[in-house]
Image (cartoon, rainbow, N blue to C red; front, top):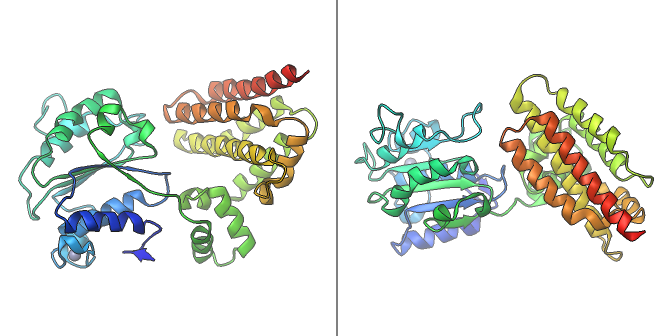
Length: 355
Ligand SMILES: [Zn+2]
C-alpha cells in the first residue's frame, strides 16, 4: 500500500492517524531511520495533511492540489520551514535556528515557529540532517522543545536516536521508519531503469540495504566495478593485502574529482561495502546459515575458511567510527589510512591470538 506516493511506512501513517483522531498529536517529533527511505518526503506529506484546505487533519489525506499543498510541495508555504545542513558545512549553523549575531532571537527557525501562522492554522518546522546538529545547535532548540508554541509542530529527521543528544531525545516523540523492502526497491529500480534485469535490480536492492538512494547509487558502473574488486581482495583466501586495498580506495576516491562532497560520498560507499562484507562473514560463520549466499556468499565463505571471521565485530565498530569521521569532514587521506590500519590490525590481532 502506498500513502500519497510514499511506500513502506503505513504503520507510521496509522499511528499518526490514531493520534489525530484522539486529539493527541504531540508537538515535537524525532523521525529516525536509514537515509534514503523517504523520511523527509513523509515529513512534507505530513505537513501537507495538517495544512490542507480540502481535507480534515484526522483523515491524514492531503489533497495535494489545493494552494496549501502545492506551496508546501514547492517549498514556498510561509508557515512551513525546512532547515538542512549546508553542503559546505559539517554542522547546521546555529544562525539557522536563532538568527545571526545582529538578529539573535529575532530571526531563524525557533523565532518563526513561535509567530502567529500567516495563512494556515499552525506552523511546522522540519530539521533535516539533524545528525549534524552540534551541542550549541541542540541547546538553541531546548526552549522550543520544552515549551512548543501552541499548535506548532517540530520534526527532527535523523538516522538514529544515538546521533541525538539525550536532551533532544527526551523531549521528542520518536517515530521509527523501517528500511524499505527488497521487493519494493527492486521493483522501483526497474521502473526507473527498464533495461535493468530482475536479477541485477535485486542485487542492487540488496546492496542498498533497504535504502532506495543507496541502491540507486549502485547503478553507477564505476562503483560496481570497484565493489567487485574490493570484495575479491577482502575475500581472498590468502592473506589480505591491505596495502593494495588502501591504494585502491584512494584511487577510487580520487576518481570522484576535486569536489569534497563527491569524494566523501565515494568513501561512504566504500565503508558500507566493508560493513556488508563483514556482516556476511558473520553470517557465514553459522555453517548452516543459508543467508550468506548470493552476491557475497562465495567470498564470505572463503574468508571464513581463511579464518577471518573472528575480528568482524571490532571491524564493524571501526567502520561505523570511520563513517562518523567522514561526516565530520575529517581529512580523507588520513582517515583512509588509519581506518584500514585498524581493520587490518583487528584481523592480525585475532589471528595471532589463535596461534
Ligand atoms: Zn490540499
